[in-house]
Image 1 (spheres, rainbow, N blue to C red):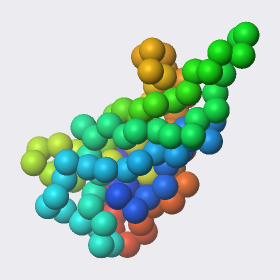
Image 2 (image 1 turned 90 degrees about the vertical axis):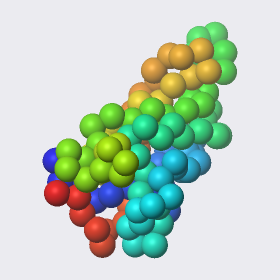
Image 3 (image 1 turned 120 degrees about the horizontal axis):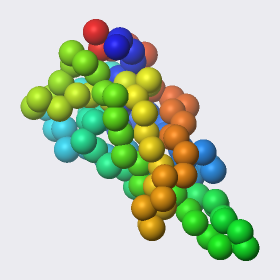
Image 4 (image 1 turned 135 degrees about the horizontal axis):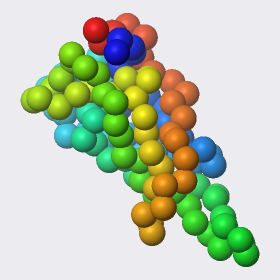
Length: 111
């Protein structure tokens, strides 16, 4: 699936407004000057305000990814695209929604 590559300079949030810290194991491939994110990367979330009844804090703490690029890989691991699926999880392991990509680089595109 073609699409713009997510990098360490992209902006990703959980559906409740928490911000993901984008780091990667990839130290080889850059797109528009920032390292490309990989499907195997797990990103930490801070600032999520999600609660469950009766007002129990249940913030998103991490994002795990799937549906990376079919053809663009780093060390046999797919790079992430704007269209990749990021699942947001609580500390208890509950899936709480999908990550929202609000900014990505636009110069490089995976085929």
